[in-house]
Amino acid sequence: MSKRKKGGNASAKIEYDQTDSRSFFLGKFANGLVKDEHRKDLHGKLLTHKNRTDQRTKNNKTVVMESSSMTYIGKNHGPTSLNSAKGTLRQYVGIYDEKTGKMRVCDAEMFHMVPFIPGLDKVQPETPDKEKSYVEKFGSLVEAFGSKKKKQSFEKKHRNRIDAAEMEGVMAVDARHGQEHVRSRQEEKERLAEQIDSLSALPVCNKDAENVEDVYTLDTVVTQSELDLLQNLAQDFFNCTADNIREWSEKKKYPLYVLTHLATMPVDESLRWQRCKLLVYLHSMLRLYSVSPSQLNQPKSFSELPQTIRHKLFDNFTVRVRQSRCKPTRLKDRLAAFVLVLCLHIDEFSTDIDDITCDLHIGRHKAVQILRALGCQVKRKIKDKAEHFVGTLALPLQFPLEASKGGGKRRR
Image (cartoon, rainbow, N blue to C red):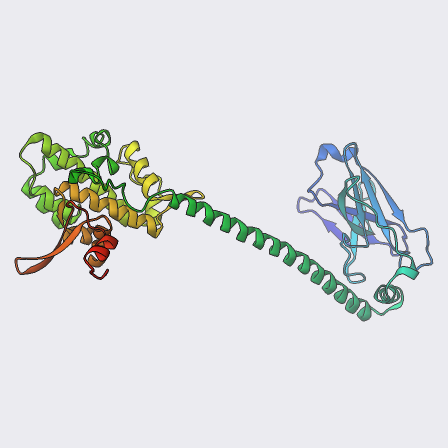
């Protein structure tokens, strides 16, 4: 058979001599291709089994390739062999002679060349026949004298046993990982509980206060220095007109409680500035209460607020879990309590809870419970033929337990 290139510059006559007993070996390196500049450094040798009468091992071969920095070993038997389909796959290599123009095709054998690392790659000694199990002895007989179908069947069963052993090992590793995961989750829950327990559910209460404004001081919610940082953000509230309030109401830009109080601002400039700053801070608290977890953990979340204010809100009403923040139910209730205390200060300690419950998206019953836990009196009033609930903070304070002991009223 002849072969000619398209350019017509070279041609070869291919001959295959089956009487040639020589065999070439091809190496496939596990860690990639050998660079051209390093090929000259490789020196190889082919090792064969000395016992040529044993049917099991007489065809076993080992190729060793050595360089100045690494040794590679390839075998045509064992787990690293590429010749798993013995007798069904053959390789050939062609040697082209430029002088004669002939190409000689010879038998070849492919070896999977694996790096040999001293100390890690240990050769397992062969097990004497007396110590072999029945299955191992039967396998040796099948490999030596069994038919092709019998060999394939035995190899399949052997692979299944190995896969089962590996599966048991993988399941054991997964079980350990699962236990470690459960342990880490438990530790995480304990850390989270510690963070929540470190924060009180209600603002600090001075039960011995002589004035109502000293029961829950404004500093427990926000200090004056922190309010002064909101001067620029309060500018829109300070200069707003009736048209602005109407437009904000249509677009639902601000909460209902904030819009209602913007319509009735103090005339005095200093009091007006103070009211605007308090409403800006209240608006930030209401946003934090209703924001979703994904929005809370966005990089630009609450970025318009001064850094001091943002850290204060996050540290007091959220907890960090791994790399994100969350709002447990107890901290949301804490935030609602602080919002109601700020509303009491804005409304001179008597506030209609209808607007704020709408902004918080909580039921009226829950708002009443929080106000009573703060020591407030909650009364129902009829205004414009509509029912309203008004929470009032007055001295002496009336807490739910004290009311049930003194007045004999049932606790709702």
